[in-house]
Image (cartoon, rainbow, N blue to C red):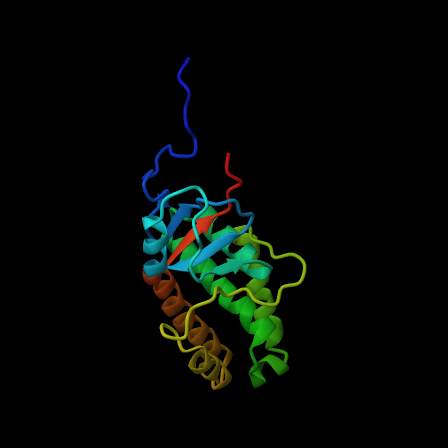
Length: 190
């Protein structure tokens, strides 16, 4: 009963602050931050090689706004790849409503998309609040062709085709995010 448990390193690789390594790699940040931070694996390796309490951050993405809600939902389900993939599909549907253009979305079929999104949000207990402009996580253009993805959505002729294009795109994005990026969790130090 008298033992002190260090919650910052319990169940983690203390050298790299790893929380989970699959399906996505989440680590505890070695710096004070209130937002999740997304780094390429190569940059995360450089960061891990640094010593001291104030590491110099290599190029990275700070996940704010709508992306903050996305990464929080994914982190909450970090031990269940199937649910994470379903969440990212939902994120793709949300992005389609917010940022994509397709003639289908100018018809009464838009109602079906809204129903699907709200049903999935309720099932997965996920909400986005405030200004939601970007919900998909950023991916460097070397790994993912965002223009081709947008063209596949614009080219869908049916709602089923649109859902299929979103599914294919978000599956590819999920796999790239899994293999090429590391996510650092907010941490206030201490």
